[in-house]
Image (cartoon, rainbow, N blue to C red; front, side, top):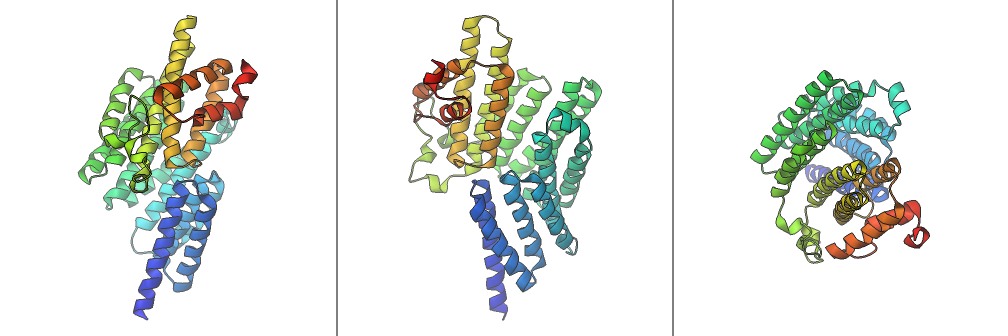
Length: 366
């Protein structure tokens, strides 16, 4: 009987871990099926701890598939189970998922919707605080909680910056820095280089959002130094060595996700420069730089999976930015082709494909 129980415990954990891994790489239908099977087995065997974790992963499947409100409904169920457990870790992980869900919902709202839903800031911060408190005795989870709360403070500082509420912006930015710095130190102490790099990259985005753009380059440099050279696109073209068919199965995929975020930040800085430049030659030069970084960013993301949440969010952001800046589609196509040739990327690149899907093929704009 004991042997059978141990086998059941191991099966539920395996299904839950596989569901999470597949959710991260955009394989939502399969991830959903695995999580549902894990939930059924956990309920049947009375494993409340694993049931709470499986329901939380089920929520993460919906979260990474873009169904943020559905994710919250699964976390409600997960919290009911986790509240009966003697240790706080399961509750902390669920609160972490809830914080992300509220933040992603906020990110998807229009300005008018944000005005009507301003209380969501309080919700996301409450959840992030709960996660940071309940996960304080589990170092790897604590890193994730600090990273998430740092992102919450970053978004709040970003809004206050846009509103011109300087004192509140400074306070929130300071809180963000402290959480990201703590995450960096703790991640370094326990050997989580990828989380360290992500913290530095998130700090770079904070600096961008609050107008401290001169400090962004150093934050991104710190992030890049932490990641192995074999994950980088070579300067002279070609694919990262770790993307080789014989090695990619052993790759740490979040490294590429973080590199993608860093390249996109560089792209946004270059787009700002292009928008601020009245000289035609200077504008085109800045746009070429931006498109190079966009192409690399999406290429890094595509190494993780050809369809997953971070990649979808990045493309949605680019669509909005292209319309906001009223960029020349003809010039974007031209620059994207040049970037692909210079970097030695296989064409059409993900960015070339994105421009075509959004605005039509190059010959339409010739």
